[in-house]
Length: 253
Image (cartoon, rainbow, N blue to C red; front, side, top):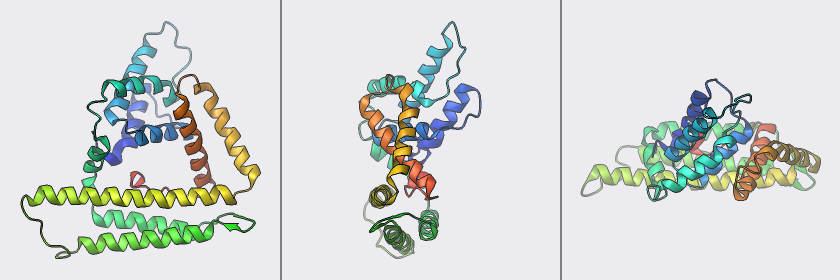
């Protein structure tokens, strides 16, 4: 499995290369990539699926319409994932193990940037529900996590592990990153929940209608479970964009 934190950019670059242009991915495309990532689909399966989809496209006698979305590749990606299912066992751990390119200082800086963005955001308040206290609480948690990462990285902060130090140190680092990613996911989910509750109903309805419209052409190409997940992630992404909020996941470093 390729580097855990390159999952999104590798797919974007490969799709653009096969399409032959610098087409920017849409909100739907990014949401689809996230469903693949969350489903544990290996990066190699996604890249193979993109290749297979374009090979099929190039064999068509008429090419009057270009491939304008990753959704065109969805069925081939799922087929490639099925073919690689045995190799995909433990994919999440393999992805995490690719994260060693990011040092404690970089991760701490990323967390603090996001904390600052949360603190300065102009967030909605619906009746008695206000998103700002949750954002402030999340920002405080991010700063605490950043300080904890830096303190653990200080020389002499832990005793050297016995046995094969290199292997065990890497294993501990990967476990810490997994735990950190889980904590960031919880913070994001709480933020999404309060944004949905505090944003006026008409704005949520408009975003949902936009999602339905954009997803309509792909309902026959993408499994129903993925469509449901895409719809949810589409709404989340639009809410973050509306309030200029960052993604907290380490994927977005």
